[in-house]
Length: 181
Image (cartoon, rainbow, N blue to C red; front, side, top):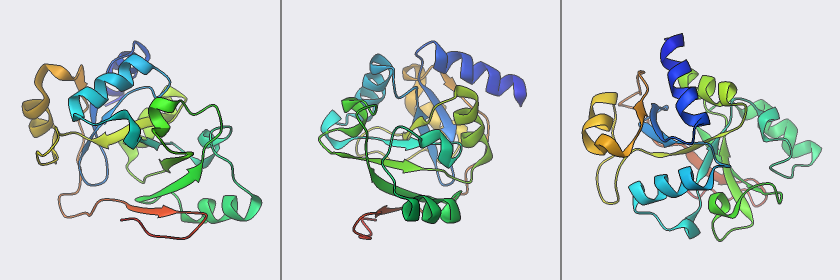
C-alpha cells in the first residue's frame, strides 16, 4: 500500500487529480492550492466554482492558518474529530477563492478513513474532497466504479475500501450550530 500512496502523492504534487476512498464513497481529490487541478475537479463534477469544495485534513493542526477558531471551538473540534462530520468554519485569506466559492466560510473535515488521512498527511496540506461522480450520476462506491465512470479524467485511482452502508458526512455550521445535511 505504501507504494500505492507514494504514487498518488507524486501525482498530487505534480498537479494531478486522483480518486480515493473516503468513509462512504470514492472522492475526487487534488492539492487545494493548485488552481488548475481544482478547476479540473470542478470540470469533472460539472460544478460551478461558486459552490465551494470540502477540504479533508489529516488532523486539526493541518487547518491552522486556514480557518478561524476560538479556544472553545478548537476544543470542540478536537473532541469531535476524526469523524464523518464536516464543519463550515470562517476561512482565512489563505483559503483560495476556488475552494471557498462565493462564501466566507470553508467546509472542512478530519475524517476517520485511514487512506484519506494518509494522503492529506503525506501531501502536507488538506486535500480537496468531493464525491467521485459527474453531475446527476451516482457516486462511485468502489475503485472499479470510480475508474469506469471517470476514466482518463483522473490521473490515478487509489486502492481502498469505502463503507457501502455509511451515510454522507453530516455538515454543520459551527458558529450557528445549524445542521445543513
